[in-house]
Amino acid sequence: MATIKDVAEKAQVSVTTVSRVLNNRGYISQATREKVFRIMKEMNYQPNEIARSLMRKRSMMLGMIIPTIAHPFFGELAYHIENYASSLGYKMLICNSRMNQRKEKEYIDMLKSNRVDGIIMGSHTLDVSEYIQLQQPIVTLDRRIADIPYVSSDNYRGGVLAAELLIRKGCRKIAHICGNLSLDLLGNLRSESFLDLLQKNDIETVVIELGTDVFESEDYENMITRLFEDHPDLDGLFASSDMIAANVIKVCASLGIAVPESLKLIGYDNIQFSALTNPALTTISQPLEEMGILAVDLIDKLVSGEQVRMEHILPVTLIERSST
Image (cartoon, rainbow, N blue to C red; front, side, top):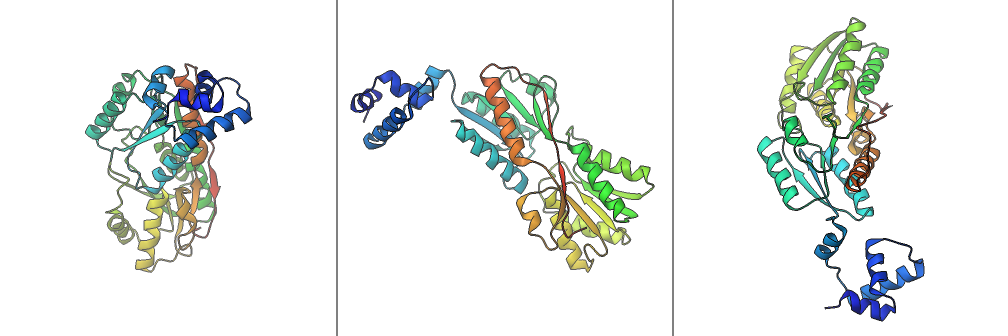
């Protein structure tokens, strides 16, 4: 098996130069860099990652804990995070907590034992004290915890945009389907601002809160069907995710409720399939790629010992399609 010394001898450079190429450190000419990589490929040289991580005092691995990668929102977010992290030389360990406290704690312990450089938290079932005691670089998504940087879209503005559009469309009785508002998540701000604005405009509202396992959609259809049976005069609906809104479209089709003629519908997230529903879904777009890149950049800076701001809120935009 080829060693780093063998590569250096064949490339006619020093072992230090090969090491710098591998670790992307110091100035190395492009010609030398390409030559070293070509020799490594020819010799089938595999760097000793354990030795490299000990030398760098970094594992070049990041952990990410999310409720479920099967949900399109988290799948797309994880894709952007892994793609950008890979460009910086990191490998990702992605864990599905399924909003279970025990699993979330077990994954945190597993990531620590694997000496990951940092953790991106997109699942938030544990108490605040559990996160503070981690004592390693951590960035949260959509949750504000003391002394831990967080990344979020402007949820409050998102709720305002949804309410303004439904009001502008003339809706007078509007339903809002959202996650469990007892959870300490910044996403609840989209519900708060939406309902506040409707109340100020004297518009009748119906609020449906989902369970704590909000990302499992098995019971969505039954819940939405009951909503329309109990409130047949609804003329507007704001769903706190595109997945919920897609289920609303499905139920409306089965019940003969015309969207947007009889019901104006707005989702949230702008995941890829939201443009493919029939009718195409009006939604509030979260900048998923920018959020993912920012989360990785923050972790990378924390690992390097840099100071970062705690609050990082990115703007949302209204994407109006056929459902309104």
